[in-house]
Image 1 (cartoon, rainbow, N blue to C red):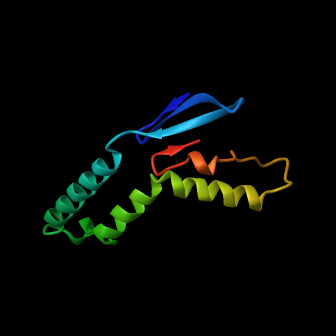
Image 2: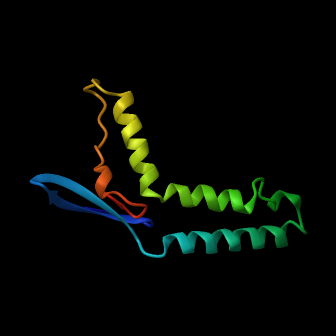
Length: 108
């Protein structure tokens, strides 16, 4: 159905229901950590020229935030919260996650 830099989405059937299965690409978490390491390395080097190249958050904070954004357990929790918040509102819809089939790298 769709593909992005972090994951790919497939159509499937689960107990007779049409579902979307979101699968995180292998190694994305390692690539994020590598990219953040490179970003901060160059920031430190270039900040010797100008302080405008300094990054205003810590390296660990950025890694943690970006890693949380690719954790599908967190996305599942957010979908559950949104569904509860907008319950009964016909004009707003969110997918209903299958909690038992969701992991950090797969969302159904």
